[in-house]
Image (cartoon, rainbow, N blue to C red; front, side, top):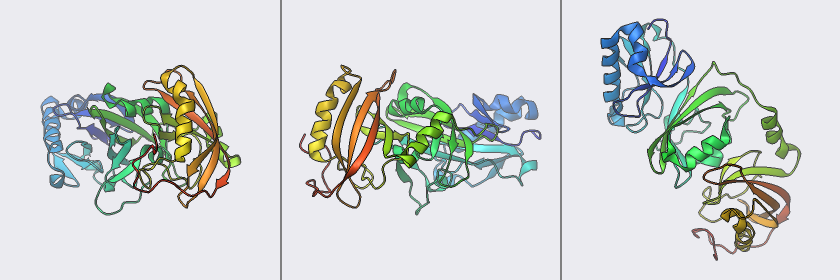
Length: 339
């Protein structure tokens, strides 16, 4: 084990400890006891894996910040709970070296939200407030995580029980610094995922030309592009910067973002797209609710993403101006007024 700096043990599945990362290289969920056999021998490797598995099921309040098992130093991943458990392990001889950055989180596909424990907040660009987990809309979270396979991730988020998903991404937590990370999602139910994101320094930090072009589009024009979940008509991932100051549903209250009259217009125009009869729809003069009051007026066009299952639509919005019309919907409205 002396030649291995840190191994990331995935302990989310009871009785099946696996490896997510070894020596800075992401692994495809290989057996933890097998990975430890060479440096420690089969008996000791099995003992360590079994002990870690038992630790993972312990209540969160009983999980120490660091501990040792048979000469192996164990450091829980920030945000580890009984449901989302992972730990960095290494020989005690490297106890002066901190493990790579990592965080645990959960995803609720019904609410389309990430749940980020306070101790995971720093890694994913959030400010820790108090001791309660933060609830983060997917569009907010994916603003600073540039996933290589965006569509694959979004589809895994929408149908959690289709199976595990692993991918790579570049993390940009609100500063010029960035890091290459690997993300592992595991179903915990028909509408939930447990996730671990961890630093993978061996992966090169790259930005494709298409990504650079999309991210700069909104800065040099008034065009904004977004991926939307057709089933719930909810923003999942911005491909450019979003229009600023918009009261997206769920960010401030439960009202829909468009003006109620425009909600009806949107559903009339988009109905053929939703049913699969048409691939594309366009609508001008949509009023989007602003946080400071009034409306941003946009023209929009959307098209179904080829092969997306469940269906996704990419929408392009062009900002045309603002309107000061009064808001006819009270703040406690539950959404889709008038439909």
